[in-house]
Length: 150
Image (tube, rainbow, N blue to C red; front, side):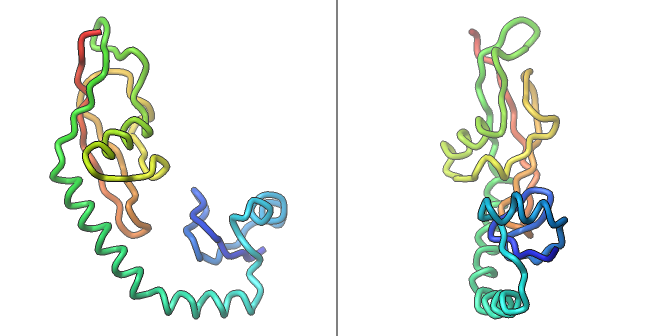
């Protein structure tokens, strides 16, 4: 079944993509959740017209995302966390914590667009995260978790 995505869906596609999925997935999940609409010929034609009109706006968004990526590459972020024996953290650091620290540094990035390599962090040291700023702009962000006596 052909559908048009209304918003980004992880592992499926981005907003305004026309994708083919199984009937049950579309009828029982994507359409009722408001994530997609049926790709009728009229809807596809209207989508193409809207995409033409948005091309200039999209170029501006890509430019903004590239500027943010450059700023993130120059950012040296150190996250402080309480540690115990062997530099193990009390708790863990996840993408929500990283998004919060980036917000403190002046970069508002939604946590769902941040993927920490290896999942959650449970020890001090240097780490890397993949941040999707735009569908065409991805950045690898290096940061460090440092210990704070607990």
